[in-house]
Length: 349
Image (cartoon, rainbow, N blue to C red; front, side):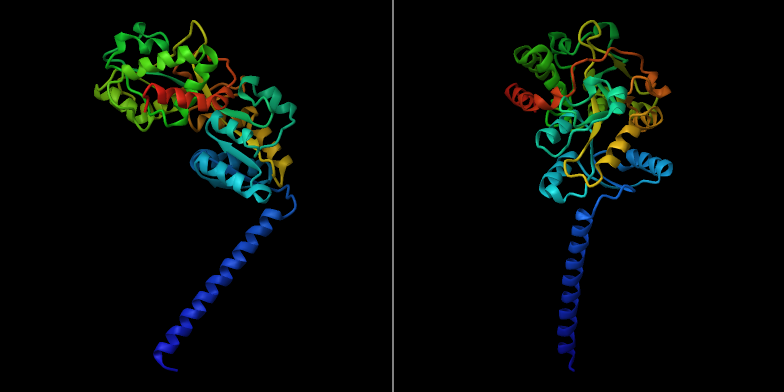
């Protein structure tokens, strides 16, 4: 057999092996997706970072013997994947980082109702779905961060006040394209109405010192650099930055303490509509709502527990107490499209 012939045979064999492997892999995945319920395994699609959520998976497995398989990605792609997979999805639980995404999952029919007295007892109504198909698991506040070098905290009061002329050229914000600001504006629409909310967001835009930033860290860095004097961020971003550099001239201010309170949001989860192990997924959710897991879940990302019987970590408590907005965080999703259109109208990029 000459050399070219041997090469051709080798390539054909290689191609044949690839096709066979692909067929076997497809069959294996299909079998896994359609296998009967296995109470010893839960499959989770999670938008939480692996290093934050995996320790809880490991702890649950240690305590119960139940194994947790998981896939991590951003919330949008995971939600799209759930919809595309339909009845064939291997996912039992969908975990994500914002009430807006949880509402979307509910609205698009990829979650199922959860009947659980444990969850009803442990998690306040304002952090649960009205359709009973998702619950919050940890809490964060989106609040004002200011320069301790240039701002007297006595001059701060509300989110609305950041739209006053006194703040012209002194404000930095994260882009409106990210869900956290969309959720903030959506809950304001719920409480203040669309007209008043549009006026105050337009005021923020007028007071910007520069174009909006891609993330909360960059907005705080701009405050430290003197480009602006204040911004609005999620508390855990502040916590991480201060942990790395305790001497940063930044501090937290809790706005609207005389009226509706500070905007809060949740990370949370729901049992998927086509879960192969729905009871196992519910049991895991119930475990996550109990005191030990609540503390670990919140502490890992410098967040607040949603279970009111559980205290925050010492570091988080050091930021001080605050009154939280009592509006159901579900509004962050239900009014998200309205919030996006409003921000577009006023030129908030």
